[in-house]
Amino acid sequence: MRIEVISIGDELLIGQTINTNAAWIGQELLEAGMEVGRVTTVGDGLGQIKQALAEAAGRADYILVTGGLGPTNDDITRTAACEYFGVGLIRDEATLDHIRRLFKRRNLPMASVNESQALVPETARLMQNDRGTAPGYIFERDGRHYYFMPGVPYEMKAMMTAVVLPELQKAKGGQVILTHHIATIGIAESSLYEQIGGIPEIEALVRLAFLPSPSGVRIRLNAMGEHEEEVRARMARAVERVCCNIRPYIFAERNIPLEQALAEELISRQEHLGVAESCTGGLIANKFTNLAGSSRFFERGLVTYSNEAKIQFLGVPEDLIALHGAVSAPVAEAMAEGVVRVSGTDHGLSVTGIAGPDGGTPEKPVGLVYVGYAGKGGAAVEEHRVISGDRLVNKERFAYIAMNLLRKQLFNLQT
Image 1 (cartoon, helix red, strand yellow):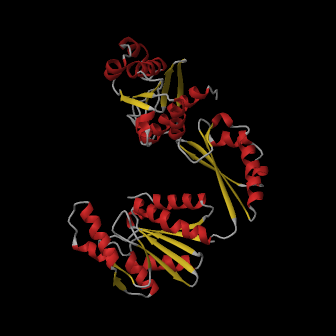
Image 2 (image 1 turned 180 degrees about the vertical axis):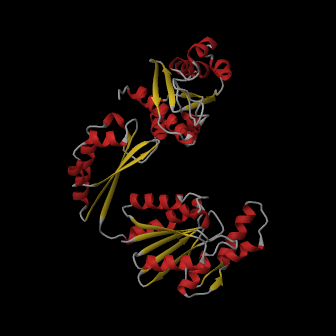
Image 3 (image 1 turned 120 degrees about the vertical axis):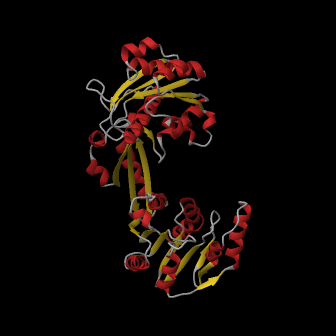
């Protein structure tokens, strides 16, 4: 089964919009036991789109196209599809009724240009868009299947989930593809590689990939074959071989972020967390509260950016800051203890550092961060130095360094 993705939009080529659609499609297909062979990105041009379709048809059986189905003049994917397949447009009353109901439900006037979205390719099978106005189209020609979906991510995802993935799974046939994720934190990719050891032996069983990011290194294992029992046995041996020497660094054997793993643990313990942030500016609180049900474990987050805020809201002694500086181990510890004191939570987490790109000194350079923890069992502080001049990357890494300290305290880990 050969699958390609075509992403359409000038905004993707110029970097104005990140192509998250292709990444999401690739991940979802992999989880479903399928792989994308190629992703092509083209601009909003008739010739470019038709050429991309023709080239994909020479390589793939299933071609997934996203983008350019909106109502404005730069949305020309429908026109390109009609020209490529040699068909005209017809008015679909069900689609028009859906668009009218959508605007009525949102209590918005419907522009006349939206009516044009009810003009659909005459030979296409339609995919209803429950979250927007543009329907999706399915074409079949010469044994190949083409799925045209909107570029708006939540509209595309709904269409993929409801129609495209089930149809591809049905067509997949007998080959078994299994995927296993191992999520790690607190160890560099090169060190992880060395600590696992025996990589050639593991790759004789599965395909192994290391995926580093500011949030840690994820390991992805893929096993393929025709007999499910044999593929599962190979995967189990490979997983055990990978995990045996790196267990203290593993926070999940699923494709989830660290904040979700911590949230699940805190909820299972019926315990609560408070966070005091300086240099991360609320990023840790944001990550936790992005999770549904975060009120079950997250009590509060305080952004105490200035020295005055640390003193006023967390009770950090003024002379402590004067003696050691705001970016210091004693202040990080006092911040963590302060947020526990004012919130009454089981656990307190703090972070204070220098995100850059300026503000550093030889003694306290950019990338220096102190993270603190306080709880019933006492307090702990760690110093880390992140080598990056990018402020946003540093903030992201600082946030996960702090969360990793919480993980180690929860599970009494030494790494």
